[in-house]
Length: 239
Image (cartoon, rainbow, N blue to C red; front, side, top):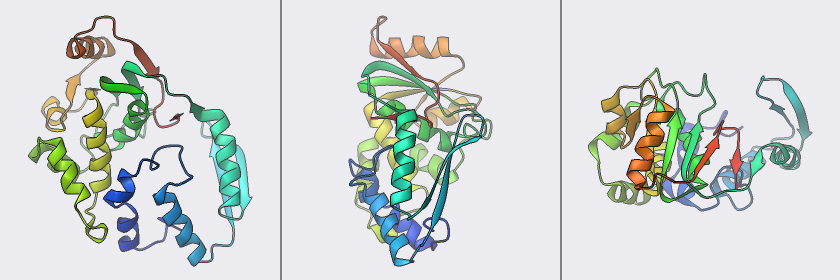
């Protein structure tokens, strides 16, 4: 229903800067999440009568199904998923993560999703090592332009937050989340993407985990930095 068949205007508003900035707008958090509340309200107004949701495993096999009321059935599905995918945060100096491989690691835009898992557990001022093939490049012209043309992340974030909800720009939300990640930690990007493009996006390019770890330790000035690995950043809820 939403965003599936909602209007562009409605979807854009739902992705506004204030909603994205809310501390409850995070992976695995639903209670008090303004994005979810807005979507549930829309479903009720549209009189959505029935849903059928499934949960799949890493082999894309259906392992659980829920159906019925859009809120209660979803709640049951969340309970099952949390029991399989939710982990406690373990603050670390360096966090290594991925975007789950093909097809989700095709570009840098999509890789921001995996970075948010690392963001939830990397120490302030630490380093995130992101592994994503990114053979399709940046994934969004406006996304690349935003970071290539603005080097001050604080000023960028202020621009996002001062944008009225009705005037939210396309891809603004992903840029806002990415800027939030970059403000917390340095990102070293292991990929096949062009090095200059990676730098334009405020990251440090690398071409192996070994090189990335060395760069991270140098950035932190700590050869004994603690390291945490998240094998699949889009399938784990770090709380």
